[in-house]
Amino acid sequence: MVTLRAAERNFQLIVDLASDINTQILVEKGEKTPDTYRQSFSDLGRVGVLENDLAKKLVVSAQVRNILAHEYDFEEDYDKFYNAAKDLIPVYQEYAKRINLYLNRKK
Image 1 (tube, rainbow, N blue to C red):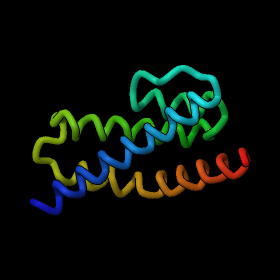
Image 2 (image 1 turned 180 degrees about the vertical axis):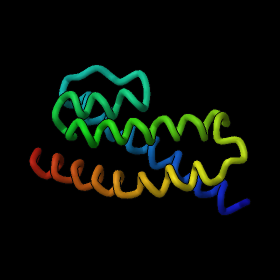
Image 3 (image 1 turned 90 degrees about the vertical axis):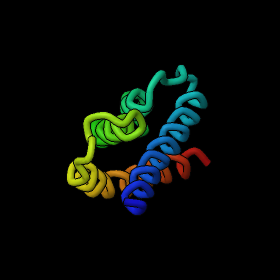
């Protein structure tokens, strides 16, 4: 149970930190601060920092984060969280690459 809770918390923190990164990029580009985690990802797609398909997948991660943070829907369904997290690992690997490319182009 401790390992599961740690995995859930780490997942939540990854989404939180990504959203902070998104917000910083958006503000630097003169965009308004997103109202939600989901919006931060979709806005990065809208302004061309991320491809729209990747942004849509990341929006799903924000939805999973909200389920975990607000303790609804996954109630005792560990398989749902495991499968969602497993599916999103490559999405975040791609996110990190795209953010790195964006930041390197800015230099």
